[in-house]
Length: 174
Image (tube, rainbow, N blue to C red; front, side):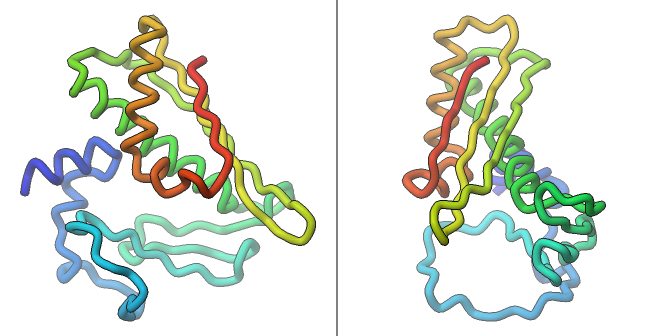
């Protein structure tokens, strides 16, 4: 079980928080069965949030580690927005996937690894969608090896897998 949590921690989950069982966590969220979800594997962690007020509201996690104000994109509100949160989550996860790829390829990644994520809210006619760009900086690394890491990370990162075929995505080595 420790190997599973160590792999999860590499994706930015944090082994200490991951080891807490959901039974030990107090939750203000009501548990409801998800009849439309087929089991796909062993659940390593479930992030739970409660959002009220939509894009001009608040969001709070069940463990109170996240408690934020939300504001519509481009507004003068004091909060963040779902696109920024998605960009932060995806880039953190993608960095973990790069680290996993580097381990499997037996190469070192630079400490200065950085990802600039951009998530666009797009309107086409009456429909809204997202598109995203991950601009990855692996300073001092051979470009061919760096590109191989990005390609492998894009195949394994849970965010990349979830968005594949659903939104336009561009992964660029800068």
